[in-house]
View 1: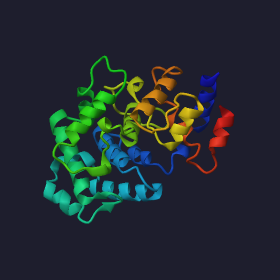
View 2: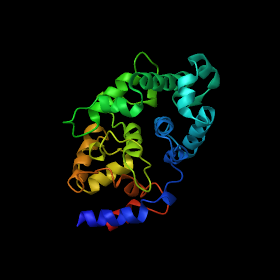
View 3: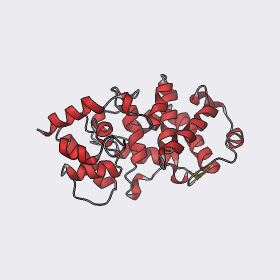
View 4: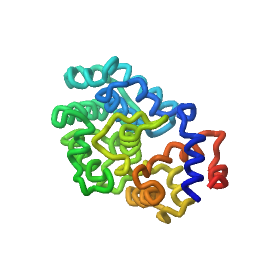
Length: 257
């Protein structure tokens, strides 16, 4: 039975020892939810490219926001932020994009008290997934700002992998995902779709679509919901270790399933 096989993989690989290197590590430094959601969101937005460079870049940003990202965001002027990150560059992102992101976080917190509440306010009780909240959050963050590639637009067919990864970190709680949010149910999460999860989704026959977009992510999520309706993203971390970690190959996974 597929669920039994997935549970076995979960028990073996859903452990903190398999996290490093992963931007998720930064969230463990913030026991307070209001700081964790800011640090986690920044880490997720920068989670593209070589993982070593991601870790170095996120660490540098959070160092300037220390000791409490919430206080930094809410007390720093925009000019001070521009001075703090003058010359910043990460792949497609410049200091303008980063400061716009930080200022967007500030405006969302002023308007909704937290990032969590902003997502929640964009949803209705009937929503099966977080998608409407994701769209609403993007609209609030992107108002007259130059965020660039740091935040994907869910209405442009993007799979929004980084945003959905952030939501997994904050909504779920187990040995790997630290959680902290309580307003959104794990049942509403959508699988963060990368090349590894796309291959796994096709391997499990949850999708035949070749485009790694939001529609495919939702199709794969529906497949996992048939196995575990209340927590369809539960197996995301353990399954994606295969293909990411050198000692765990996709061939090993296919044999295990």
